[in-house]
Amino acid sequence: MNIKRFVAASLAVFVVAMALEFLVHGVILMATYESLSHLWRPGAKSMWWMIVPVLLVVSPLFTYIFVKGYENKGILEGVRFGVIIGLFTCFPTACGIYAMIAIPYSLALQWFVYGMIQVIVLGIVAALIYKPAASA
Image (cartoon, rainbow, N blue to C red; front, side):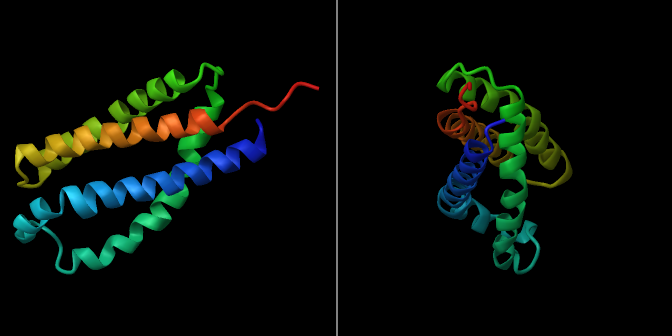
């Protein structure tokens, strides 16, 4: 494993994930969240800081899994990885929350679709930045 590229890719995944989280949840879905305010924990907006430690853990794990299966096939490898991880995480999460909390189907669907887009983008970021160590 190329440690420098791994660290660089992990940091890039973290930064892009933070930006995408803000875009999706802080901008695109904010009006929907506000219209469903009766469903959320009181003061839920004040808990947004928790995304930072979560992504500080998830970003290197995401990158590590990518690196372990790395085949040096370019951007499409990142897309493939993102689709696999997205189906593994976004689909059960959206379905599970929909089954447990009285959210509209449209919100669960948006969480799935936007989540898939986010993870595919993160896979592309990992693929663009990570490169294997040069042969001696």
